[in-house]
View (tube, rainbow, N blue to C red):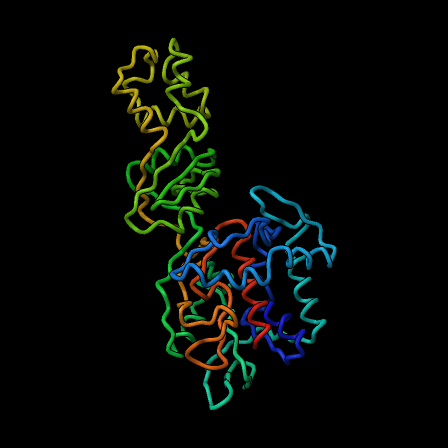
Length: 375
């Protein structure tokens, strides 16, 4: 996006990429269909130490601007859920669109190029690379974060930032599944592959989406979303029935056993595990015979299930990296470093993390486009 935006201004642009293929993360995104943006982009969909930094770029290049580009290239797309836009065909449609736009403005891309050293002289940067020496007036760091190292992710951007005196806010895996290691794990193992519509809460944030039980812990959109707000040692709270009060439902079937009632509300597998976990002594009792105290316990476990993850799956499967280059040291208008003239940072390398659902791609498009207006 930066190369396209700068190229349109007649700038001489060279993109250096250490990968053997451009846009690998684009190709694998969205299950191979690329969730390229969201119909509802709001500042609240982003985290970072400076909650205002991302507003300017997102307002100057919006989701509608990117959708127009997609439509200009006749790429068919659809809304999946919650405003998430996906390609009808393959992610490569988006990649080919971007490469075609680069070609149109003569922005060049060199693959298999490892940057070995970056040196700043009086008015330019010198880059020693595996393909030789390059010099430039403006150097844009658009190298992403640490997520999915097998796709070539690295801490290169953070190293360059530190080299030039920038602060890097603590990084961690975000939009990532939780792992469970306590006695709960054996129960979750039996539920592996089961999905449930839930509301999950942590540190004042809540998300209502599907949760997936896995053989290692918890995943699914609701869990990936809340993982960005979770810190090691925190407890998450899960409401297994966000639309139904379990006690009110049960009162209408008070002649049935608790297990029969739970079978009506959940899959057989999930209701059996819930009985084994929490309600073994009362599972076969008619609801009418259950004490008030036990009913309160049923309500608590169904609507306020407390789970303490022991960790996450880490960068191996994380969709993004939380944290990054301190945005207080970067211009929100131009994306130029406030410390080093001619040095720019865009996208995920910055301390801006979007929610799940196309928000991180939109941040890449918006920040890249904004930077390209000034380099």
